[in-house]
Length: 349
Image 1 (cartoon, rainbow, N blue to C red):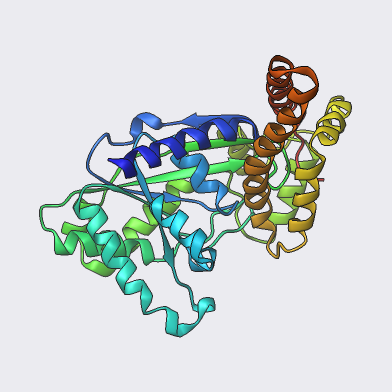
Image 2: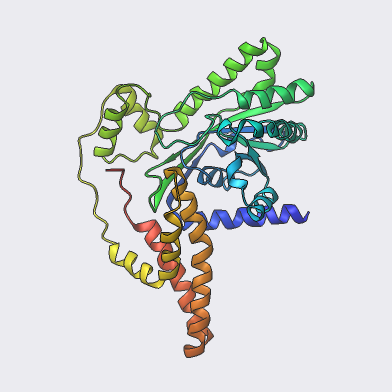
């Protein structure tokens, strides 16, 4: 019961704080999420830990996640992540001797699905900002079919989820989350030999993901296509519209990027948040992968901004009283929310 309250409290906090971080969050297909029963969410992975945050905060189910193992390197972080149903998955780059740990993780996944809970997996096998659906690994099929094999009466719904950012790693960004159509894995498993069943499930998930997020085929035309879309400053969160442009090879004319007339407000917020900004600048120097910029920026800001504003409000109350201090604290949050929701978001240059 306590764990449930903790999970739902964190989920509510995430849902509110993400509104301060994203200009607009579009969510489609929530009605496709089964209200009960085992579900495996198969999600594309362009933006590190931001992806599961946006998906789970818009899902009615309590979710379990598989996350790359190096995120769990620090004991305190490991304990916190485990309390929120995150589990490490090891890759070859983590060391071949570590791969044996995945057997225990797979068993945990089998039990999660056996207990008719939900599991989130990124079947592309790693994060990548490219606007394309990479070939899927068969790891997620091993989990699905392994659970079905060990539990003959179990039904598992596989639900592809596409997540698209207008411009990841920049604040603020528009985000689109699209839940796809349910896939009956039991039917695929029972009516096909296992190697064929694996390919059918992989192909069905891949086919849906290519429609649920912006997909530019990864061929010799990829860079040219992406450049045309960026030059036209398209709204990538209008997924169907952009995919139609790509399929028909018909792109809008280039347009000038919109000017940010709220820049003075940004500098006012920056002045009011100078210490969180300095903390972020220091930590950002240690980020080695571009996909983790958004994750680290969000993690630093979601903690440091409220703490710093609370501290400043406490100082204000000594000079002007608690009423003015409360007004200052609320105004500081409102200014951030205003800038987040009202500023322009362009594509990459």
